Amino acid sequence: MPEGEHFRRIQAAGGTLNGTTWFDRTNYYETLPSGDLDLALWLESDRMGFFLPAITQEKLDNQRSVVKNERRQSYENRPYGRAVETMLERAFPPGHPYRHPTIGYMEDLDAASLEDVREWFDGWYGPNNAVLVISGAVEPDAAFTRAEHWFGEIPARATPTELAVPVLEEGVEGAAVLSDRVSVPRIYLLFHAPPFPDPGFEPADVLCSLLSEGKSSRLYRSLVYERKVAADVSAFAWPTECVGMLWVVATGRPGVPAAELEAAVTDVLDTLRADGPKSREIEGARNRARRQLLRQLDSVTRRADLLAHAAVLRDDPDYLNRVGARYESITGDEVASAASSILDPSGRTALYVVPMTEG
Image (cartoon, rainbow, N blue to C red):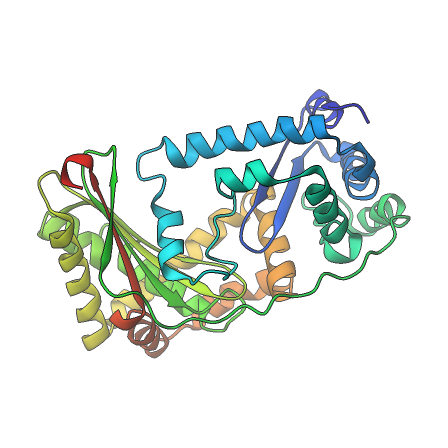
């Protein structure tokens, strides 16, 4: 297929498409009118089964430039853009797969050869290493039939070897300082936490909601309204496969040093660990977490993404049918236990991003 033809055909049908890569999976998705299901399946089966001979040095160089430009825009030239990869470098030892940013470093992108890319594609892009999700106005039986028609002839490939990923519990003492072109400091705290397939993931997610979701949440109320040391604060658990991460990120107000901001955050976290959550907090956090999930399920594209995520990382796409009840059943004791174990200072890694004049 000529270069760019995939995009042109989707756009001509009134559709959109994109692709994403994260720690544990690569994701291609297309949104089209339901009558164009065959178009999407044909194009994706062509990519999976017959794209390898079309990978040329010219195409590699072109896409290398695209990704390098994306890295400049999203990481190197964006305020606070280097923070996450700096945190990963601190929190994970050399060789750990979660230490490396998904987009890679410039030297990685420069070093990738045509042979590297072809070997990677041949090793991972097989039907036995993929999940196909069709979401929207389709009849299930017809969708399965069409999927078999387009993908059935693609041969299975050797199953990739699973990596042994070390599970970490210890953090890094002290805080690193990263100077950036920013006007106010921002602090990042990373705690090792249960990963997405672990039964402890949902209590950790509710804990994040309790900490920062909504203006009545503990961190927001204390740091933004009462102490007035932060302009914004958030807490979130990444749904990774092997090693979980719970993040707390707070942006300071002008004139508030990063160390003072971290002390205020730590005070809230330590109080929660010592005293546990209140019953009304649990109910509110549980409801907010469920509401956020339902908002995502309202989107056909996001629903497909969540199904794929559960299928790949949990081997359980039916998880989405049960997760609402799981959130409803989370108890105060579960959240208290999550706070006690996850927010332990010994498991924390910290970073201050400060204006260059402060570095």
